[in-house]
Amino acid sequence: MAGNGLGPWWFPPCVRRGLTSLGRTFFHEAAWEIHDASYAAGTPARDICDRGFLGAMLRDASEAATTPRMFACTALSWTFWAMCRLFGWMSYKKVRQPRLDLGLQ
Image (cartoon, rainbow, N blue to C red):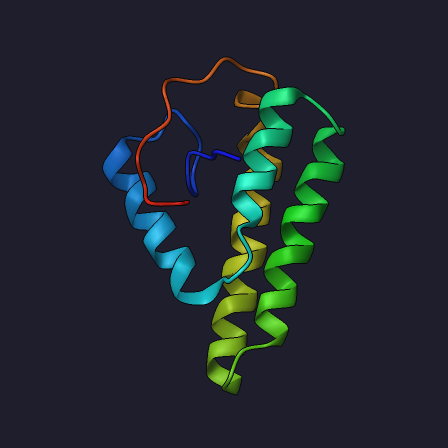
């Protein structure tokens, strides 16, 4: 499964790389790959895609080794989810530019 990393396809590649790198610091599940594939396919519904993305990130937050890390991961989870809810309509079912090599495989 291929994803464009964290951030919408219309973000500059350097921003997506930075967000993806930050995400890897906190999150272990490749939730954004599943989220990206679902957005591209247009199924399931956008709110269900976003809820699954949030759930995967919060599972990772619950497994954090320290309390500060858990709080940071939880805050990032809710922030990424809110951004998906606010701006995801711009990417849901839209044609994407070619996939970047972000080392997601």
